[in-house]
Length: 503
Ligand code: F6P
Image: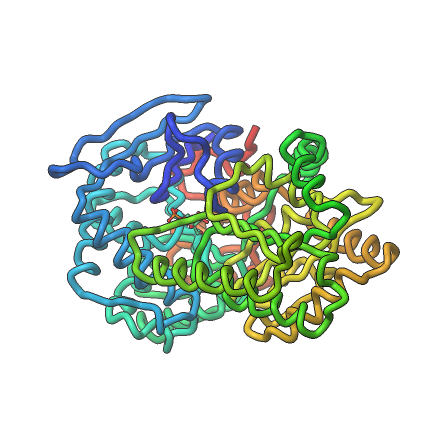
């Protein structure tokens, strides 16, 4: 089996608990099952030039990391990745704080990562790069002579080209992404936006089967929605619902329904708009005063980025105002927690909630929405109110889908969720559970890796027309269904195995 080399900005550290967030949730289990090398930033900022690579081995996985200097952390991570790319890719250009010096350091850090990674690679490794921190890495590796199959997966949305154009580097970053053999997205909308940007910025030509023809090469695009382990999470939630901490929360509710939101404190999550929706709920439906409590966990994140600090200040004002306006001596409508809460405890809280309120303005996937579904008691499930702009909305059509910008829509959906009959809650939950029940991060990873092998096969064959690559009679099938169709004899000698069992 070929070794899998995962590259991501964040790498789980030996000392800290698993880092929160979709990428870690998706990759941790996969790497534990499959083994391999995980390369990225150590999480440490050092005073001088951080050139040393630290390597450690744990549970079948080699972790290789480099430190960042203070300047690199500021310019690459805070200013360009989180201050420019993050808002742009989420279609929030009004939040960007652009400086071309940051873009330069972003590229330098990617180049340094490529230089550090290249000697660690073996000829038959499969390289899988993750997320917006590392858009130029595939090209940087190619420049250093790396010919291994390279896949890239974007965990966040990909915005329309005219939005992206606000950052002058975006054209060259799209061209660099095309150095990969396979580029994966969370949704068909993200894929379509990328394909259009590749046409515009790189002169790529679209071919059937989500193939881009660019400079004599073929690059495959695919949709791979990130998943959770639904049964594991369901068991965790059921167990944690009986824990002392969760029972304490339940007692504190004194019979009220719980409306729950859980995320990082991030401008894309629509937190202020959500609070406006909750305020509107109490105004339009005063019957819920004293009968429900909203708990919002918004874990402080990316404090080095100005827009996050500004949001925190605005939230402090609004949470204070909402409680001051509506609270009574023995009741308060909102509890707001900015500490990070342990994921196991969150599972128990999710099971306790009557309403899960997940209303990002834009989100690649949003795994909390899937975790809310998995956490529910099938006999008495809560209802999910979900932004139609989260990738998860494509799969969870049993949720009450809302426009997160519209406080009235949020208020009406929460009112409907709170008043929903048991039969309707069960029916909606069954629909959502069926959408996630048979999926998992392991299957997600296996699908991507198999598609990467397939994409490499296609890219390696000279430009003779796609039919000669996959079949004599048909265009290539969409990614996912094509995995068994290409004959192994057509694979380039580099590939050790065509099928990639993960355990
Ligand atoms: O996909 C977005 C992501 O990279 C996720 O892994 C996670 O939700 C979050 O961003 C982590 O952010 P950071 O590494 O900046 O704390």
